[in-house]
Image 1 (cartoon, helix red, strand yellow):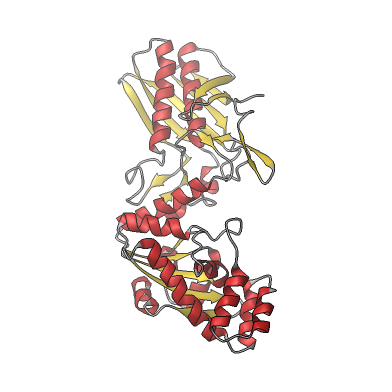
Image 2: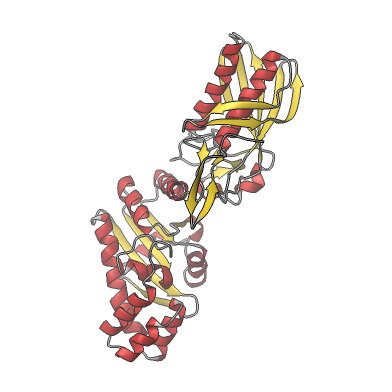
Length: 380
């Protein structure tokens, strides 16, 4: 059954990736349908919803429960070809008539609650962001106007599987407990959206700043956290991840007034930063072997050894070669100042950056001069 997105897609790696719609669109459509059924007195199977992006959706209504003054129904989330943890969830709206004019909107089971400052909604509020709130309220008003209804509504959005799904999202790290967030600025999910991931990094950093963290411990991913747990008695649970977005992470930090960042990173990610590469995803840039070989030559490696490094597939392999040839320490002494220099260049010296680099096979590789001093901010 067509939903209005059949002709909306992007081309990525020679494949069509189709758009989807957000949890915010699902909630708004379910609320709109519930009002139609509540005021019209009969079930409806589909509802139209105009998204902020301007795309008109035609969404199926599921699991309808009707009472004289209350209706509950659901719309199933369809993320299109985006790898989204919320794909397939049923987003419910329960709408009740009230004598008091206006719309009272809240979250029910499976919708998270904000527990920390610095997020879009205040502490204690349901994690229904600003645009979805406006979409839900607008959809309810639109339906009510067709029936010339002047009374009020209570609208409760719930997601029965939201709490377990939230564990796969950034919500626990952001201080949103008990369920997923109802999200979306356009109402539409664009496949493989980097913008959403980058925005979540900024949101987490903002929350940490609002809760008194002027210095941040940041790793690209889970390996960094595992390394920290093994080698340092630190409050790792208060660290955050930047994924591949080193540059954007620094930009957020400068904008928020963060005083310092300690990056703890695998050599395979941050060798790229030694060449000024601020997005470390392989599709953006690689040059790992080239940068390792260049650093080794500066450290005194022979041409034949440099060629051996250039032939490696992984940085772990390159580190092993350097270690066997007693050049690892000297090579890291070439790499780390360059990593540090590019980090400081990106943030314009507006904040202090320090770095610890490691290898999964060989452990600690090196660090900037001020790393130990900054580590004190993160001790338990």
